Image 1 (cartoon, rainbow, N blue to C red):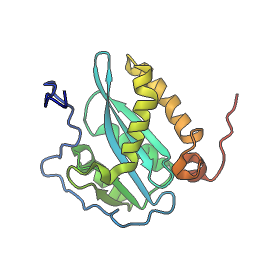
Image 2 (cartoon, rainbow, N blue to C red):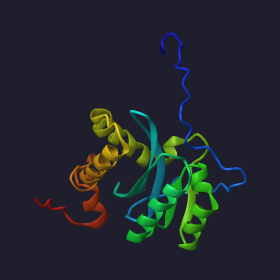
Image 3 (cartoon, rainbow, N blue to C red):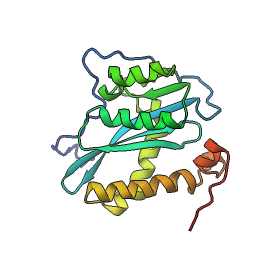
Length: 197
């Protein structure tokens, strides 16, 4: 299809649509040396196809360690599930900078207000610049190729249980070459995870 210039005509999900009147913040990570946990967190939304439509997944991740602090699923694109994920992550700790794209969920006053109230600097990718948030884009690629596409979840309940297992594995058991073959938890918390029977 690519060779012949053909494209499918189904509507593709558009996940980074800005909200009318929402403030856009500058990108703060260009040239920044990220060298410790809780310096920069990032968040993004991806979609997952199930048997009867799409669901949306948001995750909050520590940039330095790649540790996934929280995640939520939703069958709508409202901001509530992003706020829930952010709130849970902030129960763990607090970053100096929080980076997202310019989607309306992240530019909403509720989301930016929560960050400002906590004294966190807000950073947003440039329009159409997925590489500005490359760490979470890599997470989506790993998740989809190592779990979602293989398991072909049919229901939200199956997917939720599968994501629980995957993120536990990703954080605590899967070594990352970029982390000198340590797990995200070993870098974020500074300890080795011991799996219990």
